[in-house]
Image 1 (cartoon, one colour):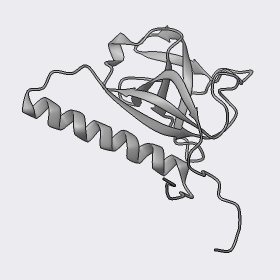
Image 2 (image 1 turned 60 degrees about the vertical axis):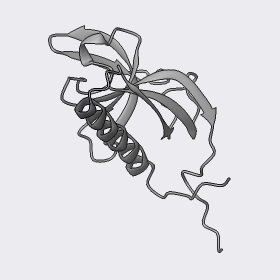
Image 3 (image 1 turned 180 degrees about the vertical axis):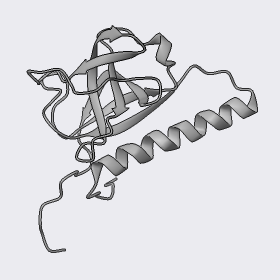
Image 4 (image 1 turned 180 degrees about the horizontal axis):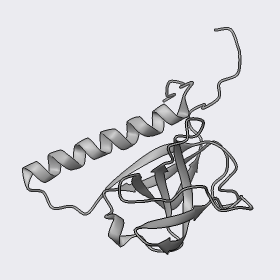
Length: 141
């Protein structure tokens, strides 16, 4: 089965995260006691090389409490940056109420911290080759 193409991978990731959070809310209302939900999201960029290649699908655990995170975990968070609003990077060290992060393929630490308010999900480290096209070529149908 061929999935439809998207021109905005950030929007796709946000949609996956929001959908999964909605499912978690419904589970909480129904009394189901599950620690997290697993979802897949498209990743774009080289900042997590060699862990995750450009244009892969990563497995996410949504609903893992912020307090359960530890150094070395890979997380998805809202950066507040308009050019890259959703980021997937590794937790390096805890400072106060937040975490310093860094992409595995980056030389420098990220600007800003991951806190409970901008944390979205934890990546499992599993990935699959891309089954959808994130950056479709300019082609005529």
